[in-house]
Length: 120
Image 1 (cartoon, rainbow, N blue to C red):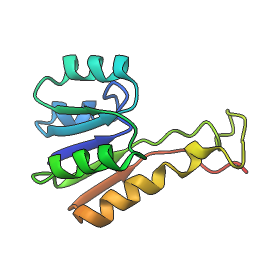
Image 2: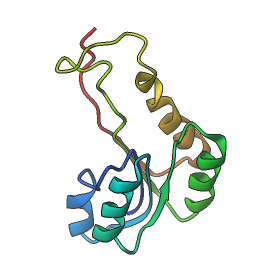
Image 3: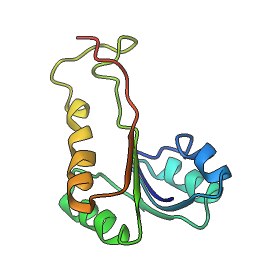
Image 4: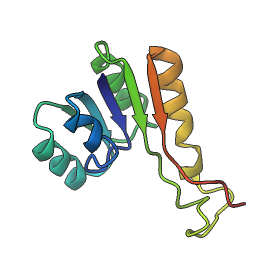
């Protein structure tokens, strides 16, 4: 599989897939420190650091995904997690919709979205 990882953090979600000879082609992470560590772990991957809700960043991700057949998305869950504060209108709760948009735009062969059971 040729993977794009959204909300990549340092690449934990795709670690096992990488060990099975799948290729992390593109990743997106909001925080530079995490993006730098991801790049150190997966030097062959193109890291796009920035906010996926910014249209320019989204387009950079989309353009980099031309050879991708798999989307992995691990959107933040602090606003809805039973371990979190369950903030009903936490704007992070809607970040998954940007992954859904990329799924629609790319029509990948495989999709893996990881999150928590809704605890509201």
